[in-house]
Length: 170
Image (tube, helix red, strand yellow):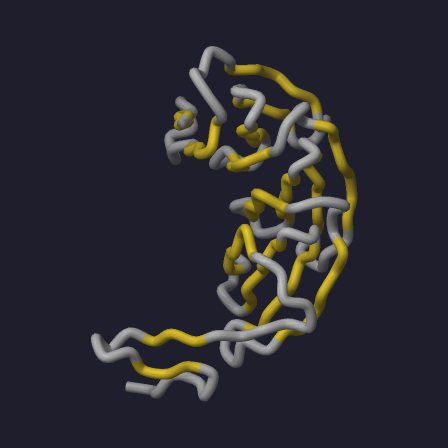
């Protein structure tokens, strides 16, 4: 067994935990590992991405990605892209090297969740405007809008069969 990096301490129930800080203390809304597991991407209340080394948890890059709080982020299955969504209802397309390629006004209220379909040809976005929208990734065009939720839509899932989309509203 190898020991955890120095940034970690061993919790009494044998779980590793640690804490890392970047230059500006701000709430983190989303944390997700890159598909290769080597880095952690955090998305903050002030619209910044922070890219952390996944072993030492030292920050590698800080980027002002959005003009307001980032609420959602998801990597594509093919590991070439990721999407981020913010409080203004904007979804941005990113290459994994943090180049912003495109942005769309997806919703009128905050984007709360994003998910790629198993083929990466489509993605869905969920919002406080009570809708789930299904998008054609290449065209950045909405192909379906699912409404009728009784409240803000906060969660989503596209099963690997790709035949259904599920969402939760509360």
